[in-house]
Image 1 (cartoon, rainbow, N blue to C red):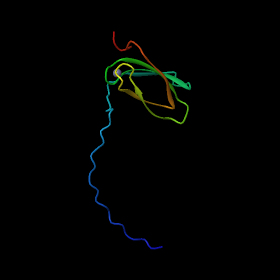
Image 2: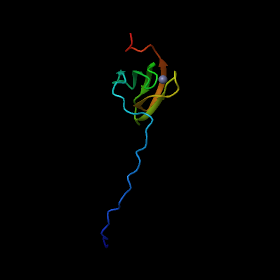
Image 3: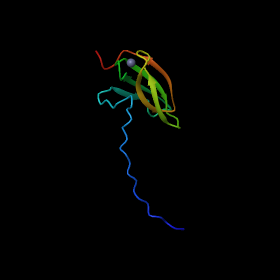
Image 4: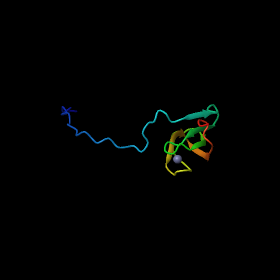
Length: 96
Ligand SMILES: [Zn+2]
C-alpha cells in the first residue's frame, strides 16, 4: 500500500457557534443526594434568577439536558443526567 504524503489543508477559521448558554460563574447551584439515583438540584434560572428545584435521574446513559425555566420559558440550566424528572419553582435559597 502506497502512502501519499498529505498536504496540510488550510482551513478557514470558522465562526464560533454561539451557544445560547454562556458560562456564568455566579449562577448558584447546589446538588443534594448526588449519591442516589435521583439527585435534587437547587439552582437559580440563568435568565430570570427564579429559584428552581429539579429532580434529576443520574442513571446512565448520562447526557446534557437543557432544563426549561417554568417562569420565563428559557433554558434555566444544563444538567447532566438521564432525564429531569421534575422541575419546581421555589423561593431562591440565595435570596433573603
Ligand atoms: Zn427563568
